[in-house]
Image (cartoon, rainbow over all chains, first blue to last red; front, top):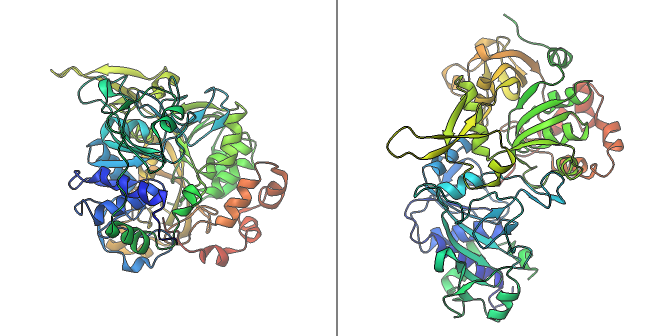
Length: 251
Length: 289
């Protein structure tokens, strides 16, 4: 591996900060970068987080990517799918997910692309998005920031609710951080507009604007903080020693 | 009391147009031998309720599904289910697409003999746009909040795969996650379980074994002895999923004839031999996620 910091490592470091003020919430990173980022958060900015083995058990130490000797897992609790539902409906989780589409309202889609009755591309189905986005904090990682992912108008099938359609102070979306291959964002601009917080090295505001299908606010054009030496060591030696993260951006 | 029946007996107890719930989750502990028996039969126009995996895909490939009630269809390590996608992209399926928690809520309502259960889940999403039959209810208390009234998902039959059963329909799910099989059993008029092993009641393992008994035998109408019955899905702790077979199965979405010739229209025992034998299946390691 080269000595220079990779884009995947910048994204992991930025994404890990999403969980820093979450206390003991269940941190769920779905997909490679979010999963490594959740592990990094637990090893750095928030050791109190709860985390699963990706299946049924709560573990004390984040698991590395790839094959491992599971007899060394330190298991501290139980988290079946049924219990995950109970946990999330009570708001006790912060998940990071990768929707296929997201719009200016923060609505997300993982169901299908195109006409609903005869979709061009069938994806997973809405899965837990409707329940997740109305019940607990969610952050978003998008590896391919473009007008196909950050769409104009509305997403094709609203799977996770956005800020345009909430019904009460309880039934509202909870979107925290948005990390992409171009920068770091949140939905705390005027009237919940997506706003830029930092640009990854070498990325310009124009890159972001031309690759986003709607107007964004700009809070800061500063450069995204690079991972610390400690964070890089944890990513490279502890959390992802097999360098599975390289496939995300072909690094 | 002896509830043990054959795969053929099961098919004879089902009928066209039934609403059938399928236990398991994605590519995990699916009653695949029962699904293959349906695929090999004349049954048609089924409404299927499932946390979908290759059960949904195989039924799609055989055009058995009229309507699918689901939150997702996935093969876990292979995120997208090729046969399901093909059926959807050809516009073949009537859908009731729900949040996966709403599926549980609908099953729970049916289990409790309720017509609906309230939830916030679904609010603000197109789940409600595409399921206009789902109504709302306003809290009668001072908060006055409007909720989704998730309707009961009443099942004519539930099909589950378990690790161990006896002849009376006492069942044990020994994997760490029982998923929502209990809710399927409670929501169904009749529940049929395929089982890795069928043992005498005295061999169920006493108190320790009984912890794995996730629902009571009065819910179970039939027990089908089917070692390897979840293949190619996993059945912890007995075996993991057969990735090579799942890949072959996925690739068959382009042309199903070869897969069908090799693995369909066989007895369960012939199928097990065709995929490599029981010892081969038992040796498939459990997956790590």
